[in-house]
Structures are given as structure tokens and as C-alpha cells.
Image (cartoon, rainbow, N blue to C red; front, top):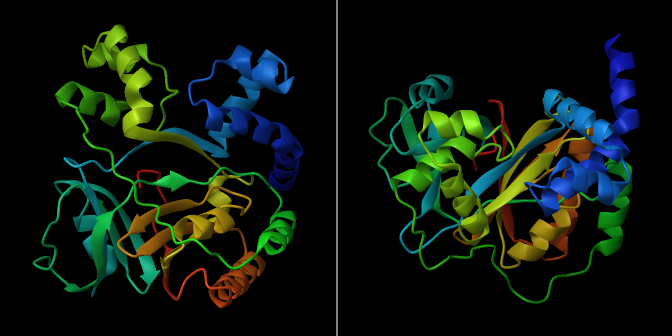
Length: 312
């Protein structure tokens, strides 16, 4: 029964992808506009969107705040003796935005809003890497077939020339308590029903509209797309030492599901989803080829154990 259901979903993926593309270009696009742009009927768009969320084929659009002179986030890649206990203990830790349990060169990854001393925590071994991070970018999924995407990637491979970084900083993030409250409310999905949370937080709809209108200046608002459903992927996290960060993200971003990137010092963090050992092996072959081509000089890797989130 499950196999039949999966086959039914796979047949819909081309139309799911068309709907996702509309969300990527305009996170708040209304259903009638998606219908106009795709030729898919409004009732079908509505039904498919519900199915996409139900099966975690689409996530978000989520809000990713840009670094500013008055606002920065930090990524702490750490090792603990008992990582599972440390991971549980860090739940709700002040100023920690997100946390992941992993296995590899590090076993705990934290995103926090301030440089903090985690070395006093029980079982702490060392910092593998701890730096200020850039804004989080999600790839725009162009292909949804693994073999096709690998063919396209290899055909596009050529040694990078001009040095680049993913780090970009805006002058000022002018948010006060009300703006941060809206961010906390809508950070994982700006398309959720608006009125219940606005009424709960006593926020005028006009204020919300003004905030959303200005949001692209201060944040990236992006959906994620997982054609086979998020539960069918496992995430491989990488740190690449690279002077060609944009080119590296562009190439890896051609994979057939959403990839996550941000700069951290002279490294690029990349979270890359794969579904099986074949895809994992082919991904590592690609990574070694990219190193040969000069996209990066060194890399470190860990596998995500905890369920990945989009708050990076």
C-alpha cells in the first residue's frame, strides 16, 4: 500500500515542482497567480500544496535573517564525549537558535546569536570549528531526478576563476521587539494562516504587511523542496575550505533537492541531501572531482542524526 502511495506521489512531482518554483520566486504568491503562471487549475494547486506540506515535499518558505553590523549569528561545530546527552541538554539554551546531533568530524552543531563559551558544559571535548556565519541560502531546485542532475553538473564543470564569498552584510537591522516577534512567529513558514497568530500577539495586520514588504531587505525568504519527501533523505554536512564559495554553491546547488549553504570564515558550510548509498557514493565522487578542479582545498564532513530543521 505504501509503495502504491509513493508511486502516486512520484507521478505528481513535475507539477509539484512547478508550484514550488512559484513559491521560490514569490513566497507569498496567491493561488490564482500560481494557476495563471503554471496552467494548473486553482483547485489542483490548492490540493497539491496541502499534499506537498503533508508529505514534507515542500517546507517553508522560511525566513533567514541577513548578517548586519548590529546583528550576527555564529556556528559552533563541537565534539562532546556523550553527544546525545549534550544535544538534549542544549534544548532551550539561551541564544541558541538551532541545534543538530551529528556523527563525523563534529557531533554537535549549534547556531547561536552570540559568541558563547560552551567549553564549561558537561562532556565538552573541543571546538572543531567556531566562527561567525553568513546568511543562509537555499538552492533553487532545477532538476528532480538524481541521474539527470549529475549529468548536468558534470557537463557544467570547469575550473573556477574569480574568487568569491557567500558572506554579505547589510548596514543595519532596524528590528525592535515587535519585528522580532513576527520573525519568531513566521520564521518557518510565511504562508501559514495570518490572523490567529497576529491576534494572539496583538499585532495589527497593517503592521504585518509593512514588515513583510520590507522583509527582503533584511532577510532571504526561501522554500525547500524534497521531491521524495523529507523523511526519505539523510543529510550530509560539509565544511569546504574554499576561495570560490559562490561557484561551489552553484555547482552543488544543482542537486535534485534543496541544499543549504552559508559561509563560515574561509569555509563554506553545505548540507546536501541524499536518499541511498548509491547517491552518497556518487556525491563523494563528485566532491573529489570538484577538489581536483580547484573549487576547494580541504573539507570535513559529518552526517546529521537529528531531524534536520530549516532554521540555519
